[in-house]
Image (tube, rainbow, N blue to C red; front, side, top):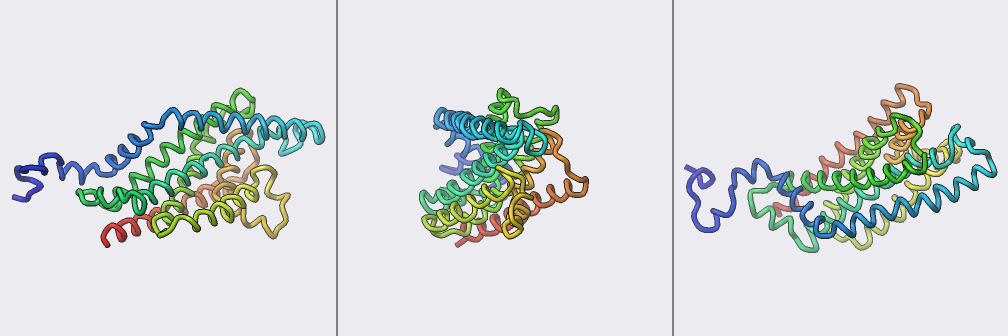
Length: 280
């Protein structure tokens, strides 16, 4: 009879190894949720203040200026705020997913080395990685929901199918979060790498993905950046759901495929690296 099946003595009574192996991913997820629960007031305040302030400044202020100069339905046949809203949802999802994959991963491997403590139990690298990823998606979903609810009083979601922009934005968060989980798993030093990512990936992503204006108004030299961007694909899906933006059926499928591929690649690389680093 193995030690996992037999009667445990001493400290082994504290841990049901079989249960940990079976439900390890959930335990990692629960651990992240407990950590965040300590700061729920600050987290909630930040998630509520950011969309309201942004909508008041850019969504309302800039929208009023554009409507005055170009007409109320000058962009894609809708108001500027309606055009902007799906992009804001997707942007919030991507930013949240990035924060909730990069920093917990760096903390686990470098700063507090909590992943090594977890790995000393029957938890595997795959379970730790997936647990972090799922917790990031839950936090991302909460950001999207708060943003979505903030948009309703501004009448920026005219379609009855507008709620489908929520899973579209979450899809973008999952796509980008999986890639950032892999980047963080391979990163040995956070200082330089993530400054570079913020300046040369996140900022161009935000500017050149059809967030503030239609992608086809950009020069061809930078338009390709939007085509490969999860933000643009999620924004297009969001606009399709929120106000009926015209998208051909096969292009709709392409948007989903482009969001799905980074999830598969990112998670595959991340979990492989988690397992390798914890086994060293």
